[in-house]
Image (cartoon, rainbow, N blue to C red; front, side):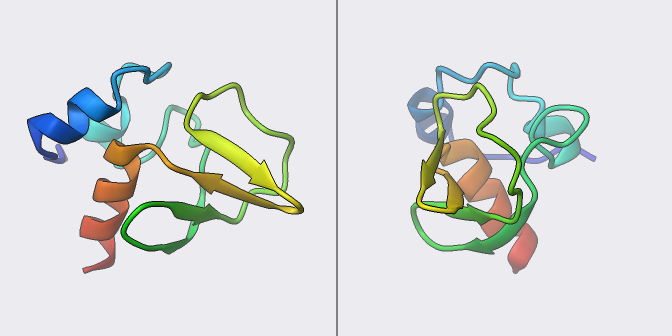
Amino acid sequence: MSYYVSSLTLLQSSNCPYAFSCLKSGECASPARCEMTEVNSSMVLLSNTKSLETCPYRLGVGLRQFCVCPTFVELSQQKRT
């Protein structure tokens, strides 16, 4: 299954280290790196408690980890609806 996001969103995610694999699978990379717990308009709360992956869009705040990749956030919003 393929997913669609706007071209503006893709431009905002231009530093994707996984070649936008989420557009094909709906998951970030293979094996999936970011398991989603919650999503809002600008970030995804991740359930992963592993150490931070090497990704410019993933950040840790305290014990929580977030994905702020515009493409993954938009895809996650689509999957929630």
